[in-house]
Amino acid sequence: EAGVAQSPRYKIIEKRQSVAFWCNPISGHATLYWYQQILGQGPKLLIQFQNNGVVDDSQLPKDRFSAERLKGVDSTLKIQPAKLEDSAVYLCASSWGAGGPTDTQYFGPGTRLTVL
Amino acid sequence: KQEVTQIPAALSVPEGENLVLNCSFTDSAIYNLQWFRQDPGKGLTSLLLIQSSQREQTSGRLNASLDKSSGRSTLYIAASQPGDSATYLCAIYNQGGKLIFGQGTELSVKP
Image (cartoon, rainbow over all chains, first blue to last red; front, side, top):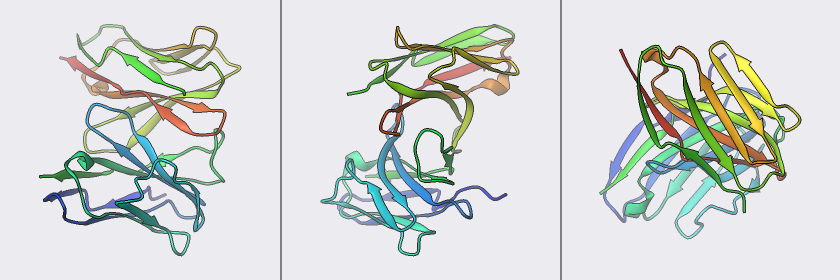
């Protein structure tokens, strides 16, 4: 079974530029998550989708971050404009059910973003 | 607000040693607790999941314990190997069904 795929794996941009990340979840998984992991910290949930609807985006900085999952499968996360503090690894995860403690999350390899 | 703390932040041991990684959380109202492993450039791999009604789980050389009343969990690794070198993350599922992570312990096992 193929795992969660993410691209690109690495990205370096100048501050104030824009960037987009792509995630392809495990086939059939209804719920998709985007996490931000700053160096030396644990991952922090940015946004959670169930199918193509947003379940939780309370920690997404909406003035510069946006995410979509239009057809309920792939998802993109965009940052515009980027700031230095956005340098982090962006992890995508997916799960079979509707999310929650009995719904195992499977993580992708992440995209490492460096903002100069 | 639930906070998860892991101590130490980094640990270096010689091969063959038994070791303990610590995790503490501020709110005992958790659904379960999970230990993950993170290798450089790779995603998170789930190691052990302990339900809130359980006290420990074992998988091979790994044993995780949970004491909800004191807000603590430990991950015990027996007979460490260089291949165990990675960052170990503790995460709790809170009552809202959200994963809250600690900052991780970076383990290095020297041959």
